[in-house]
Length: 409
Figure 1 (spheres, rainbow, N blue to C red):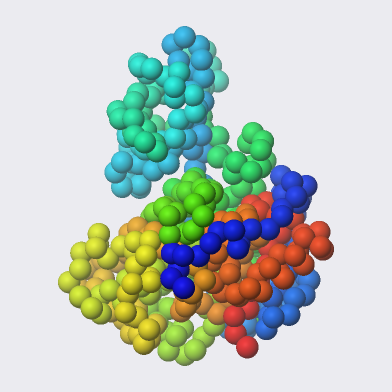
Figure 2: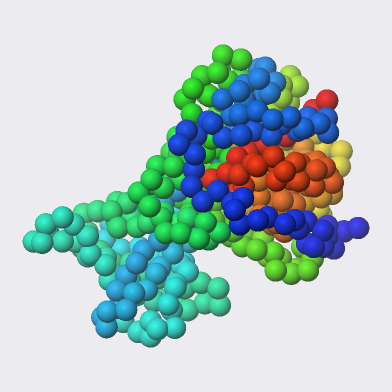
């Protein structure tokens, strides 16, 4: 069966509302950990994760940082419009660092009542030192709006403006407004590069103590970046996955990390991904290398991974090391120290994962692309895992518990 013919109804399960974790635990690493190894399940907690990761492994984390992307702005008549910043019209780092003005693609709540003219918001602590942000519509699209933001004084970057006035965009299934605790807890402790509108939630369980215990086992901790988009929460509404439009997201991988991945595969060193975003980025690197082996002169836009590329590339017999060497050669020939590109990769049952030996991840929504990714790794065993987690009072979704999937004998 072609991947496009996969029926979403086969990846549904009953998730009671009370099993959705609306708030994080007081201690990050106290979250429960379901360990899947050779078809067997066992219970533990994240403080003991080091006992399950292979000694000497390379463990990779997504170090993206969630931006306070939700803005509540007032119309001249007094009504409120909610603007959710999705992605800038230009390069992310450049637009976040702009002064005075920038342009973004956004979702708009209450858009039907926003007919014309700007909306605005103010911030500051002193009446005579209030700052103002305004927004105007450049274009109304079918799925989002193009918005131009202006602010005064213009001495602030847009990142500083969002930090002052924006709210953390919590997932819709939490069904509550963001609170002060979410500024810290809906963020990994190693978050570094601003750009996500959703957290890489598999990393929320990690603490300095967990990192220390992993390093004591000779596990090498390193980082990659994928800026998580709001599309990660987009439900699959079509009956088959072939009619679902997968979201595209920016990632950033250093040349040094690609070299480290090559060495890991040369020495058969286990590679463990923390989070589905990390896994999708690693697999995208491999697929880009496969593209370059066929045509070494591709430019970056053609190199980017589209939704079905993985299922159309002739890559069955291409070793990971060979593909990554091709990608490294392309970076060297173009004098790039980093690869910044987009991926739309959808990993579903039938996709042969190449880059990892283990995955740390949370428990995902019924009928989601993330659940399909888990099924691609463990097959029909996902049903046993999820039923076990429900029966043993695991907490689900972003602020919930997690699992470690060991993919090696």
